[in-house]
Each structure stands twice: as C-alpha cells, then as structure tokens.
Image 1 (tube, rainbow, N blue to C red):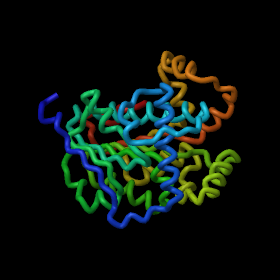
Image 2: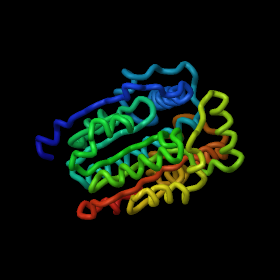
Image 3: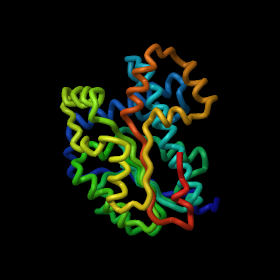
Length: 277
C-alpha cells in the first residue's frame, strides 16, 4: 500500500442543531454497552472500546451477544471487501449508531481508506463530502429505521446520485410485520423510541427494493440467521463455547428480525458488484 494511503483523514462530526430524540439516544448507548460486554467475555477483540464505553454490571443474554458478534462480523467483512476492491483508495462515511471503533480496528489491519468520516446526513451535505472524487462506502447500522420512509429514501437517492462509484451497507430490522416484530416495536415504544421507518422493514424483498428504487444498480439482503450460518465453523465453535445458550429458538427469532443489506452503483472496473457476504 502506498505510503500516502497510510495517513487517512479522520473526522467525527455532529449536527450543530442536534435535537435527536432521547429514546433513540438510549438505544445507541445500549448498542455500545452490549458491544463492550460481548468484547469483555471474548466474542471478538477490540482493544479500543474499553476506553470509550463503560462496562455494564448487568450480564447480557447469550443470544444478544451472539447477535452482536454476527452483526460486527457481517459489516466488517463487507467493509474489508470494499477496501480490498478499491485498494484502500476510497472514503468511508459511517452513519452508524452508538460508539464505533471501526477506524481504529481497520488501522490495526493496515486497511485504512484515504478518508474516514463518522458523520450524520445533514453534515455530509454541508461539508460537501460528496464532492470528493473517490469510491465511497456508506455504512448505516440501525439508522434508516429511525427516519421516515421519505427521509431515508432521500438519503439513499442522494448517495446513489452523488458518487460515481459507491457501496451502501445497511444493518437494521426486517420481518417486522409478524408477532415477534410487533413485540419488538412495542418494547421500544415503552422506552419512548419510535421506529419511524419500520414500514420499509417488512421483508428482505422490501429492503432490496428500497435500494434499487433509489438508484442503486445492485442490491442484496440476507437475515442475520443466514449470516450466522455462514460464519467460519471454527468461529462458531469458539463463540458457542463462551457461554451456554438454552433457547436456540429465541436466538433464531431474533436473528430473523435483523438483516444485512448492501448495494452498489458504478465501480464496474473495481468489481464492486462482485462483493458478497
């Protein structure tokens, strides 16, 4: 990798008129705490999160820990695939929820992009990041579901139209029309957290369609149980030995209500459409 690619620009930004709902903030904090706990008992290695997130005294359920492992693994694998396709001559716009240590973890693997931003949508436009002529990866983990369908569609269309070569990774809920999904919605509402975009999370097909109808050229979506089933066997054996899980059915239900989606536009010379999990 060229020396110039080893000194990326790292920017963390937030909107100057930050009026996010406290309920949504609470779920972001919970996500960070869950990741911190899973790391503390050995699900994956992250030497940075301990400096950024407090360790909860409350033990998290095994199905929650395995779910976060699958989430981190899935998003990480797609991110690394994009970086390798572009030889790190790219930029990443991370729209994620909760404390994120992706930048530092990529640095440890010598897979840093030219530019890396943790930023919200209004600030992307204000800072004119879309004017940077680099292949661009946008990552949204449990972000679009808190936006109205119109708002998320605008973001997806803007991203598809603003970059010559781009990839979008989205992790969020799916299959929310069944009873289990309704219970998830009700539980969040009790915490004053409303999923404004839940109607777009009806199925894997609806997740793919929203990407394609927003101008992305290719789109894929799999539920997290499928992600879990594709994990390296050695990793599955290792994490399942960490703690006992007596309700496999609950894990399966939980995993079937979250999904990993990715879409690409342009970048044929880079082989972006070939990226898969």
